[in-house]
Length: 414
Image 1: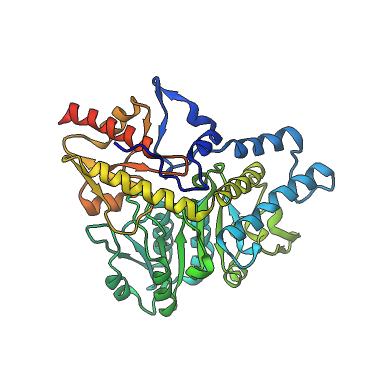
Image 2: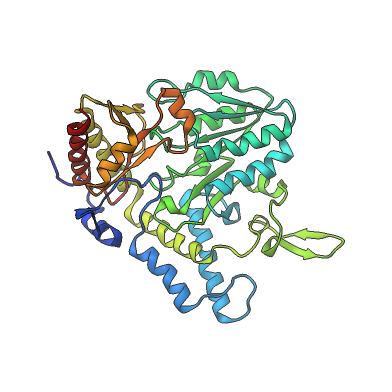
């Protein structure tokens, strides 16, 4: 096998690996081969140190204190908002709302914009490839309001049936909610075209960008997204913090979701007035350390260069696809031409969980199951898949180890 690195000039894989302390670990006496970035990415040392520096050096609650630690922590936390604005090319930093993660961001939109704008007989359009977090909140809203859920079907290669999507749109369509890249099968959706068609029908669009933001240069204005959600932990940052971007005019018109803390302007027992954006949607003490460390993670991605990351991960995906396709007993699920760095597959005679367990004993971490996307599995008539997902710290050596591990699966199960 060819084990030459696929990293392009300016993106040195060995240096990147060295930036991630956990990648030096062994598992069952084998080098760690981490292929589960789609679930949650590992963290570079700089991100880990950013959290430690806060807690050891200047921790205090933010936005309210007049003393130095509070002011320093506030400044460091709020600096992330401008970083996020630049990272996704939002027009204004106040359009970037900090939430616990993409799941909370989607729920926020469903419970605020959705409750105010979706009524009986209206339609919400989703796709078959959505993560449960972009299905269940809309089902809850539809049940409450008497609205209908309509679903864009998929072709056998995992791509969306855009002609059927067009036919689902009507003047009763209020919102279209789709993933940018499928977490389950890696297929990349034409979100700019999906947004254009939604707007022509008078609907707004929410995009789940969890699998895109760490890997592509996201431009919410070019996409013409009304809402865009992503989580820090999939972008080499900490858990417990993410972003829901929204157009300023939509966010201004939306009622608050949770009450307390910085989301207020004045409070009396007779009446409460609410804070301006973005704080109107940020009730309570936030994940201060997470916000500070998230900025470091996004800066780290930016420093590597999005074009370098895309080229690296695409070439790695092509190599892995060729190598895995050589197994007669292996079937890749999701073969559309436009994909993120995710390969989802099944093998004859072997359950995904058994495959995952065998690979684990070789030090190879993959995800096995339905990946919180059960409708995808139902569409292909399978209980689940094995998913290998790649990040900036992976190279061909990791693919070669995966291939060697799968040969052991074949030896056991045939």
